[in-house]
Length: 340
Image (tube, helix red, strand yellow):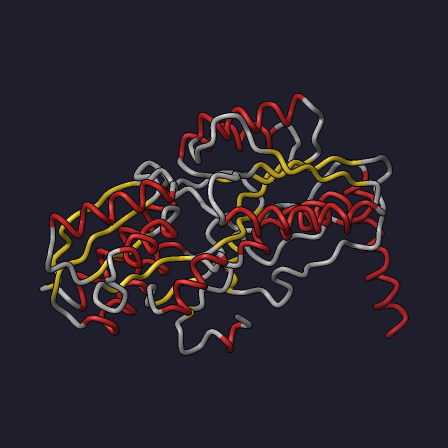
């Protein structure tokens, strides 16, 4: 009986592999299904099968602030891992230096024209949905990472944080630090990037629930630039002398922290932000930043390429449509716990 079961499983597996090699890929997981912190996050391995012919996978990213250094490092490591499997992985920064669909939609089109077998892309706004859907309909699997559209699309999976929940966590941590009253200024990267807006809205919603007396005095966008974060923070200090805190949801955070340091306001104006870039971790260590929320940028760069390869070559379907990365809150008191 055991032999019979094994034989049936073997036939099924061989059949699936044959279907994959013939171009018949299995169905994607449900768009809104999710798994929090998969066990192989950041370390998923290629299946031990080579394609019938060499493959190319495009990872379309950004390099406009320090966050992307670790994302790119993840992709470059995936490139090395897949070299021995006749698969070329290319880190590509589309022309335009912004999260929007005008930039990354054209990045998808360019990748299609260069015969990439699969594409991983930042999905900054719903304008990118038609580009994703067309690529998938043409037989090119697409993964999204870092930011995800609210509007469903035909992407295979997403790797990144639950951004709305991250915004709610920031509100909880802010109240832990400053209490339920005071003035807070909000800094985001782009109002037009849905992921940034998920964080900002999650924060606002949660703050209204737990600290309705806390007043949001200003909301600005830095376009992910640290010099803009620095200047806005300086403006806040002038306009709002009783400011209790600044919360930064995206790029520009390092500049905000530098302004707090330069004005001698560390410990007087609370500062909460995102990501474990070296400059931010140093600001946490110095007490300039009250705490920062992570999202595993390395996994965001590494895992999409490997999972796309595994899907193309081995028919391996990701465990869920949304593979949500860890979002730990790192403070001066727990830096060592997270290896800093």
